[in-house]
Image (cartoon, rainbow, N blue to C red):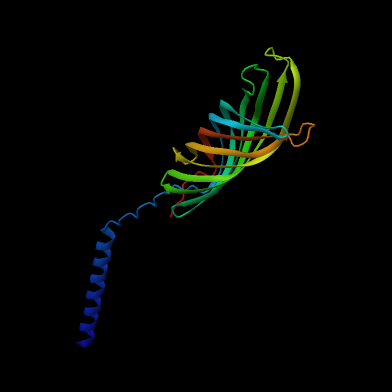
Length: 247
């Protein structure tokens, strides 16, 4: 009798388990949400830029015997453009990077030393300049606001020209042409319109320290020139490895 009851109980348990399994099979499984892609600024990039350059060269000529000082400012205002390359590393909301660029601008301007006879000028000429800069920025998803600064380089030619008269027949000419180092600082805003393409706007200030331009024959005469300019430019960048990261 006991054996019969036990077999009946076991059968009931198995039947109940079968029913529960069948019911569980009919319950739909909730799909797991797909991971959300998050844009990252980490990666290297190449690009180009174009904008406007405006600045001046401040000249000073002086001699102790006989004592005199002549100051002159040569202003210039030109289109500029070039290329750039760089790399970024994003850490949280912060982005750290390094960038280098090479630029072209056709600068050739002069200022009159003798405004009465118009036969003496100071002249500034250069056509290329470049930078190597560090960058630190803060991100707002696809927007990057940053500051930047570093070393600037340019081959700047500064001339003094003395003419017979205003017809520009050269009587005397001296020049200093050298590749000089200076500093650059500024900031900008980049925006990623896709995972790979970035547009931006940037403002930079360049300064090249005063240099002795030339030494005429008589003792104690010096002429110095300091060139500085500001650039405002737009940027178009292609970022490599533009697949968005997944947290």
